Length: 79
Figure 1 (tube, rainbow, N blue to C red):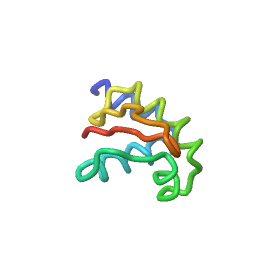
Figure 2: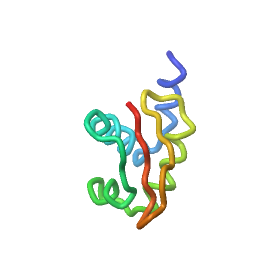
Figure 3: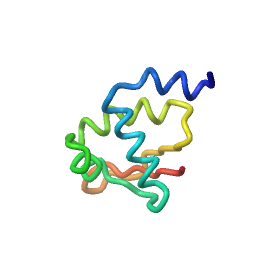
Figure 4: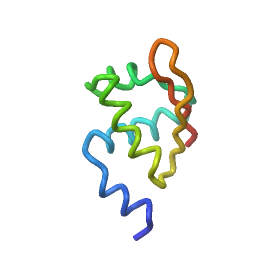
C-alpha cells in the first residue's frame, strides 16, 4: 500500500469528506474559503480549518496552501 493510501486510512470522516470535496471541486476551481466549504459539507468554517491541517500535512494528490485571511481563511488548492 502506498503512503498516501495509508494516511487516507488515518483521516477522520470530516477530513475524508473535505479531501473528497477538494479533489472534485479542485478540477475546475483553485481558491476555496473555509466558510463556503463548510456550508457545502454541513460544517463550520472553524471545523474546516481545523481539519484542513491533516490534509495539508499528508501526502495526497491534492496540494493545499493557506492563502489569505480577508473575510475568512482562503485555501489555494492544486489537484
